[in-house]
Image 1 (cartoon, rainbow, N blue to C red):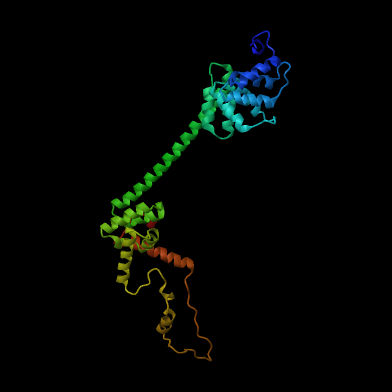
Image 2: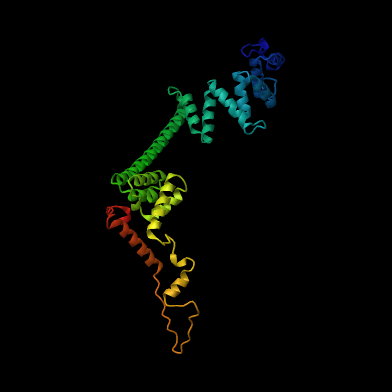
Length: 327
């Protein structure tokens, strides 16, 4: 039709509306797209009508009409328009970018970048880049910057991953050195207090049990193992060793302070020459009470630390001077 053909001298936007609307109603997408352009731009005697433009644009874009999709993007992406719809605008930009609209790709890349979605932004920008076209300079620069950023982040992540692997390998080497020397107590100490690795602790205990060397394990380690392994094979080995040591010591309170056990105060009084009855006697000569000097907490801590080092670093145990316990 000459009246609706923009290339025809007889083209008349207003007179063409009736023919275009009939064609659009018959599901001819190009006619819907042409109506969207007319109402969006306000051609000839037709006033600009954004709601009508949006209506025809959506119908055209649903059939992959390029004019309709571009008008839909323009209508819904205008934040000053009452028809602004960010979700619809993003959808239309994707369609237009896939259809080869470079400006839609540029806008879409910047939107993804704003959303911190850097990889799609980089891919879209580089796809829209035409190095031989001076108009592509900005989008090419933007895409290259995103690519360089990604390469830097990937290199940093790889370096961190490698550093973690190297550190783990070093820790494994120290543990393996203890195990190769059959220093099961040293290996267990390293697993419990340095690497805090249950798997290494289990390896050390199983090896000590197979070698009949559980008696060489420091007793404090057994209590830690009892907490770490409340059930299973390790729990059984630890319980057996603790029971064996208790039988060997006879009436022993283990890690508990025997002076706080029931009846302990009475036994201390009797051992000091007291009796079951009242032992109070008045004295005209005044009190003969002499306070007993009690070690400070710092002194007690030092005594405990010295006994621990002496147990592990002297005698038949004789750990290496480089062992953490002996330093």
